[in-house]
Length: 389
Image 1: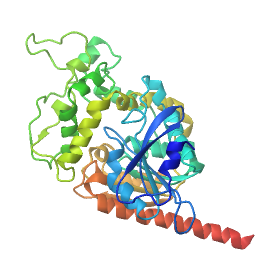
Image 2 (image 1 turned 90 degrees about the vertical axis):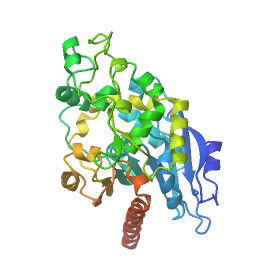
Image 3 (image 1 turned 60 degrees about the horizontal axis):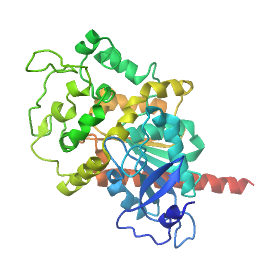
Image 4 (image 1 turned 120 degrees about the vertical axis):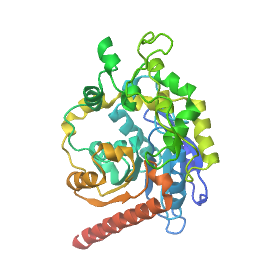
């Protein structure tokens, strides 16, 4: 373990706020936020490790409410800045964000902290990664809590291929295909110059992404209301130049603009996000959107595989991700089949995509009950084994 990681694991760590440290794992530099300690000062045993994996556009700060609460219950709670984000290295090639490399990041962090197993909590892309950790490194995952993104057991084609067939081929198609394509934010994240455009609109993009919930938020109309991916040049009435993100306004103009931030994200917290992405830019995180077809090809042998670990799933019924999966009832039905050890599927009414930030107390309550129940069953099993020896 590196000296930085050793410092992170000191006994008697403060449980009222997050600290940060840095480690090397899987060939890159990782920034970690943490609360709690590796060793329990009273029992002289190792506290269970929970790794919290964030999504887009996010960083470790996303789990501020969970880290401290879990630390108070004798867990060593750690939230990395994921590859491409925050204080963690951001490789420049898309291939360096493939699913096996990302899983090896998580495994490497766990090993650097002195653990062979851990609990995983993931949100958005972090949930997708947690599901794949269960499949690729099943022995390393004690149990998983996924937020907002359910496990998809059967996927007949790569996600980008599916989206291009549905919305039009804006990426590698003919000029005619591009001109006729419709907007989808995941496809938009694959266009040339998309990172540059996000970097020009950091505050506005984050404001709308975090602040808007369809049908709930009081907001102004969006500047762009066309369904088309590419927008005509107003002066000349035609498409200008190459069709790239420069001709395709993103979420900062397509989502309605909230009149105010929601109560769950105070201005000071929002400014943390703005300053972080103004500092780092969006390029690293957008690479995660550019690998779905690559990852589909790499994991075809896992298609149809069930999740064997204990599972807790939590989402909001207003989350657009859940709606794209057929709604809350459909998601629960799918999880019952794909996750035989499903502990519970929690659907929070009136809640959007940022469930762990919108309803931190509720999420923390469900999470801690789940973790403790898994530990009780695991301890009972170990005692049973001992009694039979």
